[in-house]
Image (cartoon, rainbow, N blue to C red; front, side):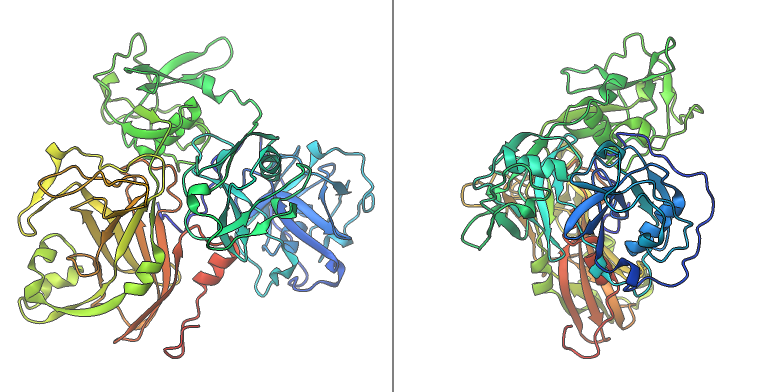
Length: 608
C-alpha cells in the first residue's frame, strides 16, 4: 500500500451501523462558499471517533459554544450543505444515532430540513437554534467526499482529532495532540485519570479506564506539545485544561502519556479463535460463520495471508499485536475443523475484525487446498515501531556524479535505474541523490529480521549477508504522486549504531552476529555507503517529493505502520537539489499535508 498518502481508517472503526441515504446525485451549490454571509459567526468541525478526516460528528460553534445536530429528519441534502460549510465539495453519506460517539454541550439544531442548494445551514429550516427534544445519542454525522472546494478559506473550520497511537487494542494508545498543524505528544507530569477521561470522551469513547505514564504505549518523535495537564474531567477538549507549554528541558519522549478508554462491548472476539498452538497467543485461525441455529467454525485460506491480516486477527482476539502471519499451519493440529470457509482476505491493518476486511465472500477459492495451507498467527502484547530521523535526511542530502566503473556491485544489487543497463560501461557516470538514514526503534519490542540467520543471502560482490531483501524504498515523486525515480536498500546490516543513555546495545553485524534494532536504539546508514541513494540520472529539472519508506512490504510486524514513511519537498534544477520540509508521513494535520503536496516550488535558491 502507499504508506504515507494513505489516511488510514481509524484503528477501531465501525462499532455501529452506517446509514447512507438512498437519494442519488448531489445538488450543485449556487456559489462557492468562501466567506459566506449566512455563516458568519458560526464555525464548523468534524469530531468523534473512529473516523477519517473527511467524516465525523458535525459540531457547530455558535456564540462561543460548541454543539451538535440531532439526526431527526436529517437527510443527504443537509449533509451536502454541511460538507460545503466544512470546505468539501459534497457529501457521500450521513450517519445517525451518534455513530461517531455522543457529543457534549448544546444540541444546536433539530429537524433540520435542507434542499441541498443552500449556501449556508442558516438557510435551512429547523426548530430554531438550541430548540431540541433530542439527546446526544441522536447526534448526526456526515461523510464528505475527500475533495476540497477551490479557494475555500479554512478559517471557518476548526481541526479537532487528539489521536491515539501505538496501542494494541481499541481505545488505547499514546496521546497525541495537534498544534499549528503538527502532531505532538503529551508529557506525563501530573497526568491522571481526569485528563485521560477528557481524551477518551473527545475521541467518542466513554471515560478512561487507565492513565498511562512512562511511554507505556511507545515513544513519540518530534514535538512534545503539553505538560502538567490538570483537568477537572468535565472539559470538552484537552486544550481546555490548564497546562504548561513545553520547553526542551522540561520533558523527554520517555515520559509520553497514554490512555486506556472504556469501550462498549461488541462481541467480535466470540467469532474467532485459535487452535493447535503451543500457547493461547498462537495457532491456526478459525472463524465462526452461519446464522442463528446454524453456526459452525471454519478455517481461512492461507493464500496472500500476511502481517496486515494477522494484525486484525490478533486485535479481534484481544491478544495485542501480530508477531507473524503464517500461510502454512500443517504443524498445528486442526482437530475436527477442516473446512475452509474464508478466502481472499485482504486487510488494511486497521479493521476491528476480519469480516470487515475484503474477502471472497461465500465463493471460497484457494490455490493450495487442504487444511495444511490455512492461515495462522503468532500474537504478542508488544511490538517494534520504526521511525526515520527526517531532519538528518534534509541535512545530509547532496548530488554525486559517480563513475560507472565504481558501480558494478551496486548494479548487481539493482541499486541503479534500469537505463544503467544500456550505459557504456565502464565509461560515463550516474547521477546519485545521496543522504543518510537514521532509523529509530521507538516501540516496545526489538525489531528483528523475519528470516533467521540460516536463510540470509550472501552477496559476494559487497561481501555481506542480506537479512531482508528490501528494508527501505527510496522514491522521487511528482507532486501528483507519479514515480520518476526509485531506489531500495537491503538490510545487509541491521544493528544498534547508538542507543539512548540508559539502553545497552544488543545487535552487531560483525562476525555473522545477530541483526536487529533494540528498543531505544537506532541504526545509521551513512550517505557514503553503496546503495544509500536514488539514481536520478534520468530525472528532469522540476519540483518533486522525496519519499523514504521503511519496512515497505510489512515483512516484520510493527505497532504502527502509518509512521513508516518520510516525505520532503525538493527542487532539482539539473545541477543542484534543494531538500527541505522533511517530516514523518503522519506528523502533519490533513490540511498541512495538502499544503505540502501543493508545493509550488521555488523561483530561486531561496527556500520558501
